[in-house]
Length: 245
Image (cartoon, rainbow, N blue to C red):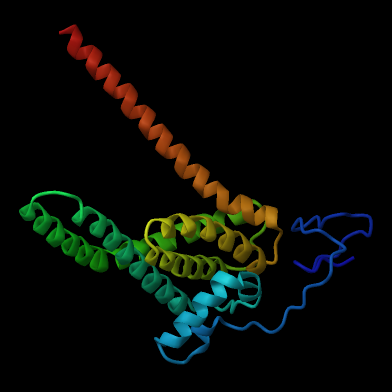
């Protein structure tokens, strides 16, 4: 029996593929020729209609979109999409925070200061966010691909992992245009799209994709916990030293 995810030949008695872990005996999902998301299909560098079409594809049809992902090594289009979407989302998130801060009750001069501070923060975000997102996209893509390799699910190259992350990040970041709940919705939607996208792009199992996404998050939480414990222990030691004087 041939696994419809990775194409590996398996024994008819196996319930799951020994190579990728995908369930055997399920209906074969037809895979057409690799088609880029609409954003990549256009010849120009930027197209507003294509930008919104791609957002819709990624948010509401991630399985189909990443199953037919263009797996070539060209990263610029996906990189640009991730930068634009994340910057717009970050700007709106900063704007809503500033609006809430500005309209807090207080004297008129404090209102003006908060108003000017909001626009100053917005300018900083617009100029700094693209550089931060650029570094984060490559760093997190590398970590995700490493974790996917460890789980045995990396059947495609780094470019596929990078594109899944860039499109997922760019599309879900735009949910921040909705005040307050948009950021929370973006987090859970991002997790869903990443797991689905890695599964389809790499033709691997859901469990392998899930572990690959959860591992970096768990690693970051472990590092943060270790740093916090180190600070607490150092603080306790410092206090004891001062009391001993």
